[in-house]
Image 1 (spheres, rainbow, N blue to C red):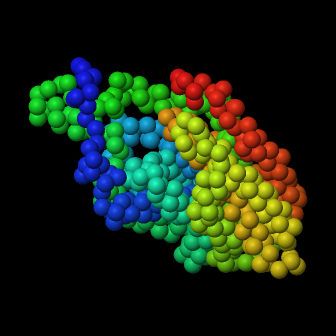
Image 2: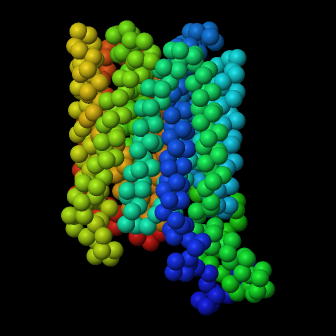
Image 3: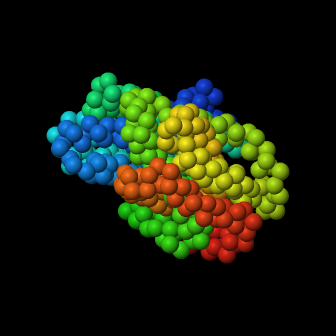
Length: 471
């Protein structure tokens, strides 16, 4: 326990400190960003690759309803939502590295019961717990990227990290379609399990990057070497481990229902994400059932969305310049958080444009290239919304950014897990044209949300007790 807070005994980073992750060799920091991107992408791919094997599981397990099999997507997303909140809290106590190692190991192990499953219940339960441990990468990997980059290169590093993870939902069905067609649905799981072993190997090569954990370790070392308990660091825990976890579990839920920024942005991003995941139900209907494509070829139909999201990521330098042209905050000297919302405003129009386009070109005899091309504006819009809505939420709450983003993950994955269950019924009842139109109209009604925050976000922020005063 720290007995004094004398500034002379504070343990902190020194100039060019070799233990500071931001001073590590450039090649190693790039490796860490790449390792985080690969590991997160595997978790995301595992989520959506599942939809490629739904028909095979339905036949093998004798399940009459496709919706029951699709519950595997839902349970996995629910697991991701819960795991991203619970396990990210543990990193504040033990550091990121041990949490990564244990979580990635258990994520890989829990794929085994799915690959060997003899009934649908085993699949649903195992995918929930697999998602729970996979949630660590979703929640903490961006923090690791931030740990090893300075402010000047952080946006570029996060964009490089997100290139794989943003396209993960799309890569899953593309890869899964060919695997299912030629090897069967079980090999979808075997492939991910092999990739998770590679991910675990990479995690062993990644050192601890979390500054609070490193400084606490250094403080204890100095105290032991000197026998002087007056040495302290800014990140010494005043709460017990249980209290830290409890606080971090309660705060995201509290913010979901009490913070206007969280309420409206969680609603908007949640609906956008849910519609994206509904595509993993809609595209097989349009390209396999209506157009008669084989599963592998049908998986390639997602290339439009994937290309769109990749374009959104590569636009980062241009958007950064546009953000820099906005008025600066007198306190920080940097553009206000609302500056990032302009990119979301652009995306808010592109998403329904892509959805309308897809809806009315989905059915033959219209050439197949047109619904695929509809994925370009749809993918760009989704990429802009996810990247820059995250920037806005994090920039608004600063010290409570992790809790705000955890709450966003809960709502986002919750809606994404539920809406696809209605996808088959929606498309069979309304048809591809009107089902897509209905989704596009829902997205149109939500367009005012980013525009209101772009114009009045500052006034909303200054009225939030958490932002202005904290708890």
